[in-house]
Length: 105
Image (cartoon, rainbow, N blue to C red):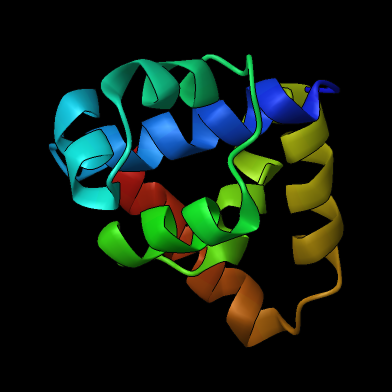
């Protein structure tokens, strides 16, 4: 995602939903109007640094968690990254990763 505002808003929304909070509830917790929270989550505006810090605090996450984007990369990109990681593993760790993967398929 190249639009930073949209990405940041989407991450805030994703983390909020993971925690079972409604947008209005998070807005109230950080002391802003729910329309302002909506604009942030939709990527129409940036939160101030102070507000971003409050949001992170209320969601019990570091601010850096809003900047993590690897899970949004395409399947092909993630597959390539996985291959690069596992191809250099020592034999015992490679087999451990294989067993872990097998538990999910």
